[in-house]
Length: 167
Image: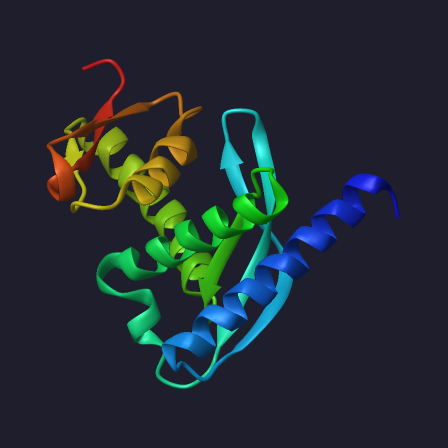
């Protein structure tokens, strides 16, 4: 394996150990596994991130409302890992594959709504969602020739609007 592969493996192992310790301190009984890399579509195509999946009973408390607790947990783990390794680490933390399912469902929703917007020639506003979820919708439809997207609103009320391109 090359140096980059080893560094990612070492980073994922370090992140897993930090996450296990944090969950123990929180009194949460769960198993943390390094899962296959989490694909995220970006401006430069598909990018993969090391992914940690937390599994156990009754872990909804780790997800929180609209995934906010999970996002905060991921942020803290990345900060601690960055402090320990002196480098930024692209780690995705998931609870029982919640993020993976949400990612897939948002991409599907975006495509379905884009078809409706194309057919009806009328804009459609999605429900308010966090920034990382809005980004999934924007990137999913970025190369769609029939629709365009924009975010509107402020704070937690920020939404994605999908519009016909030639409107």
